[in-house]
Image (cartoon, rainbow, N blue to C red; front, top):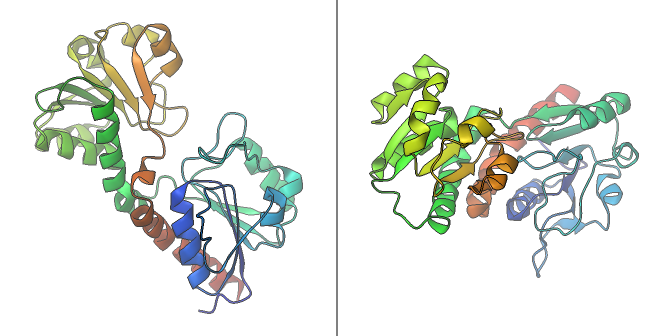
Length: 296
C-alpha cells in the first residue's frame, strides 16, 4: 500500500517519538513533528513544526503518546518544557475525516473530536503492544526501585497490586530475582497465575493484613485502590511505585503527606526508546493501513 500523499502529525512524547517519526517517514508519508526532544542532526524526512497548530495543519493522522493526558488536558511531554494541550482550534486544522491514534483520550479531547468529526483510536490496553513494550517497562521499573531503596530486591517483601499484562511480567521478573512477591488481584484467574509463577496470591480484601510487612509496593491498576487508610499500615521505609495509567493505583498525595516515598513511574518505555518506538510503530502502522484501506 502506498502512503505517499498521507500527512502524519506526531505530537508530544519523548525519545520514543523520534523513532516513531523515523519509521513513519520511511513509508513515504509526509511527517510533521512537534513537542518531543529533537536530535541535533534532525530526523531525515521529518519536518519540525513550530507549533501544535502547525504540526496538525493538513494532517490526515495525528499520533499522540501512550502515557495519556494530565487532568488539565496536557499530553505527555516530560522533556519539552511547555504544556501541550490539543485545543479545538488546533485540531480543526486536520484534514477531514481525520484520525488520532493515541494511548487514551480524556473527555475533553473526546468532545473536541466528536464536534470536529475526528475519529479517536485508543491503544493503551492493547495486549500485543503492551507485551512488546513490556520488557522495557519492567527494566525501567527495576531501575526506579534500585535508585529509591537502600535494600536489594532479592529477599525483599514486595506487594504487587494488579496482575494484568504488565503485572504478570513484573511478577515473573521479581520472583526470578528472589523477592518475596505477594500479588493482590480481584480476578481469581490472575491470582492463580501469580501463584503458579511462585508468588503468594491474595484478594484485595486481604491487603490490610499484608501491607505492614512490605518493603516495596507496586501499583499496576488504573483505579485508586491504595487510599490513606491502607497506606497508613505501611512501614515508614516502604517504597511505593505506581506504573498505572491515571488516576493510578496509589494515592500519591496522601503518601507524601504521610512521609512515604511514592514514585509515579509512567513512561517507563522510554528506557529503551528505539526498541519501544519500533514496537509502537508496528501497532500504529497496522491501524493506519487498516484505515487507509477502508477509505480507498
